Amino acid sequence: MAMGIGQSIMGQGIMGQGIGRRLRKAVGQGALRRMDAGAGQGTCVAVAAQKGGVGKTTTAVHLAASLAEHHQLEVLLIDLDNQGHVASSLRAHVRGAASHTVSTVLNSRDPDLLEAVVPTSIPGLSITAADRQLSNTEAQLAGRIGRELLLRRALVAARRRFDVIVLDCPPNLGLLTLNGLVAADHVLVPCDLSILSLEGVDDLVETLQNLDVMFGRSPELVGLVHTRVDRRNKRQNATIRRAVAERYQGHVLDTEIGVNTDLPGAQLVGKTIFAARPEAKGAVDYRALTDEVVGRLYPTRRVSAPAA
Image (cartoon, rainbow, N blue to C red):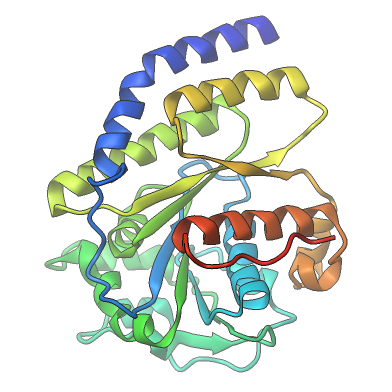
C-alpha cells in the first residue's frame, strides 16, 4: 500500500511542476503586489487551509501569541471560523468582552473591526470573540456589492493600531476565507503530510492565482508549514515531503510542527503551550515557526534567540 501511495504522490509531484511555475509567477519575487497597506501600517497574515484537522487554528493561535510574547509586537488575532476555537483555546487568557462581533461589524454600513476586539492577559495580544453567527454571515453578505472587500475595509483602523493582524480562516474556500485572503498581505498554509492536505494546498494556490487575475493583487505566500508530523512515519513522510518540495519549490518552511500531546492539553485548560508547558516540544516548534515567519516578513528584523 505504501508503495502505491508513494508512486501516486510522486506522479502528482511531476505533474504539479506547472503549478510551481504558476505559483512563482503569481506570488514570486517581483510579481507580488501588496494590498493597500502603506508604510508604517500593520501587516495582515491569513492562516488558511482548505482541509480541516491540520492544526490551522492551533497554528494561528500560537503564531499570534508568539509574535506578541517573544517578538514584542502588537498583535490582533481574528477568528473568521464560526466554531470559535480561537477564544476557546485562549479562554484562560481572555480579559473582558467586546461591544460587537465580527458578524455585526461585517454587516454594518461602516465596518470597523476594532469594535470587536477583546484584550488578553498576554502582553500585546488581542483577539476577537467567538462568533457562532458567522455561519449565517456568508449568506447575508452574498448579495452585497464588493462582498469580497468587506473585511479589508473593516481592517483600516486596526492596521494603524496593530503591528500584525493574524486571520484564522475557515477550513474552506467560502466567502469569509476569500475576504481573509483579499484583506491579507501574506498567507501561511498549514498542511499535514497527507495526500488530501496536498490537494487542498493546490486548490488554495489556484484561488490565490484567481485573486491576482480578478483584483490585480494577491497575498504573498509566506510558506507552507508541515503540521501534525508523526516523526515515526519516516518513509511516508519523506515521500510526501519530496512531492510538496517539487510542487512548491522555495515556499516550504524549514520548521515542522510535530505531534505533541501537550498541545491539546494546553487547549483543554484554555492556555497557549507557552503558558501551559513552555518546555514542551510543541512550544519549541511553534516558537521556531514564528522566528522563521518573522524572518520572512521582516528580513532586517532580528529574530529571538532559539528556545533552550
